[in-house]
Image (cartoon, rainbow, N blue to C red; front, top):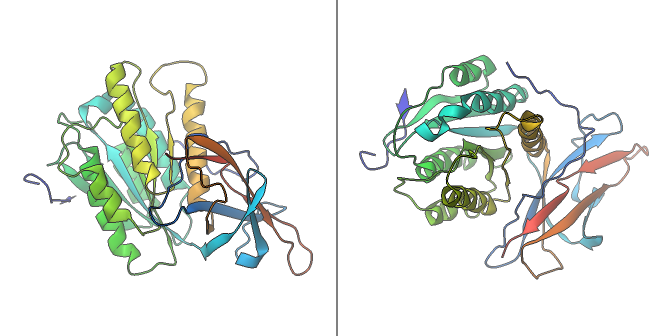
Length: 317
């Protein structure tokens, strides 16, 4: 067992097709301090839903609220390097089933050439690498099967910071791949040494995206729920990732489908081959949803290609 020391003492399968509609009203895009630039993941397929991996920038047109935008950067990002950060603190006790579902879904949707690591955390002293970089799905899945809860003051930000350090170390060696972190937690921050501003500074300028599956319990006090949601939103806001709040603790009809939909959207983002950046013509960044659409030019022989993006994003203040 390897610990990420730096602080104080310091079978569910989803192989989905790509013919579904996306709706991510809870997604945020980042407002850069120097230039307001938005990054969007774009998945391109042919009419049979097979990946198309030879797209160039001139083949892409991007529209925001029906207005064509100037693309400032276009990158092909494959394969995927993924860090999965899992909260095993006491407040997650009733959510282990959903933790397994989320983790197993992410792992089983890894492609050949992809690699992942798993970090389990409780408090600032228990932040451990359960599985280091590997493409072995069975090894990754076994860790989710064996997860257990411990008491302690949850350190969400510390786990995120140290995992960010780990993934950036690899990203510096090869910028051609996609790098992302998925946080599975209720967002109940209690005892971190690092602050969100430290995470923001660390990830600033990188293409590492953070996605959050927030398993927030309905029985949490309202103040705690609001703080948790705020933390989760800020974490993803910094990286053009996306956050989701599936209602998964209540045993109600359809609740599991909400988690499934959230996982499906995260996997879509992770599987997208291209990262497109643009500077919005609408500079009035406020809390408002903006409709995103991508049009892909036909191939050299007239073959049709289709671009798929998150349906919308919410511009931050």
